[in-house]
Length: 117
Image (cartoon, rainbow, N blue to C red; front, side, top):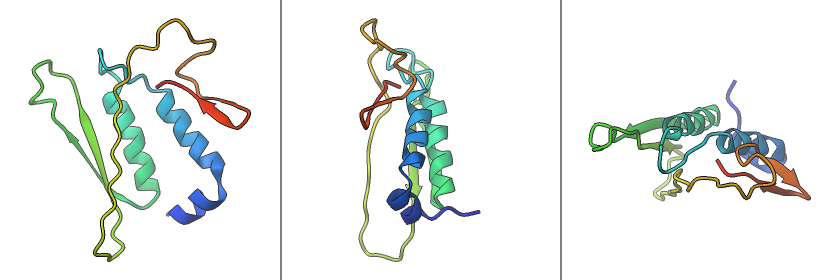
């Protein structure tokens, strides 16, 4: 079943919290880079559910350290002459010891979401 992007974004904040929880639970520490591929797969899976065509480009073969650095490109063709591009990154600094809760578990307090992944 194809999910309609507008319906989800307009009427269902629970969906956004669910997706954000998946992303936050993935440790994308910039030093280890171990969670990069997993995070890219989560993003790609969600984009596909929304009806977008998805490609993952990974420069692991060019990396001197042999670690994955995937980029997710998701496309939605709406027959327009205009293009919208959203760019983000996964690399975070290590979480450190100052967290009062698990930094890789999304926590919603008073309508605000907190997490680190």
